[in-house]
Amino acid sequence: MNSLAITARRKPRGISLTPLIDVVFILLLFFMLSSSFYDWRFVDWPATPATESTSTVASTPPAFLLLHKTGELTLWPGQNSWPGAEHIQSTDIDDMLPEKGAAILLIPEEQTRLQIMLSAFEHLKSLGAVVELTDPVEKHDFAN
Image (spheres, rainbow, N blue to C red):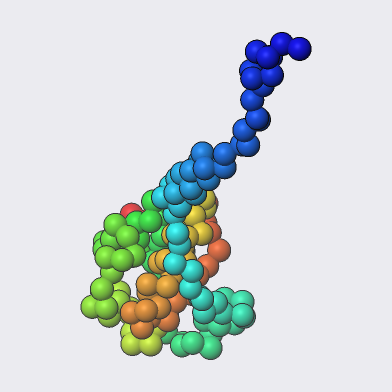
């Protein structure tokens, strides 16, 4: 036997898990930093149809607030508009209601994202307004 052949044989090395763990942590950090986290909250949604609930809220006419796809809100038939629901203040609520105790009908355009509708609905409710969210309409042609 050749003595060189015996010394040339090496013991096989095990696979190191350190690079694999590094890659897993890098992927974990990437997905955590690139994802968005929503603040999930409970929305008090009326269980009755809008026709029944508006008659029980008040006999006064409601204020019509048009919600565009972009998140912009327009008071109809007035000239007031806001770039987003978060720009509406409690004094604006008092100004837009025709009478004390009247409801606000939030009318979204078709193709409006649900997150925009719920954010506007929740913000108006947090200001103390009685809000009803209606079915989406095709286009707000009557906005002006």
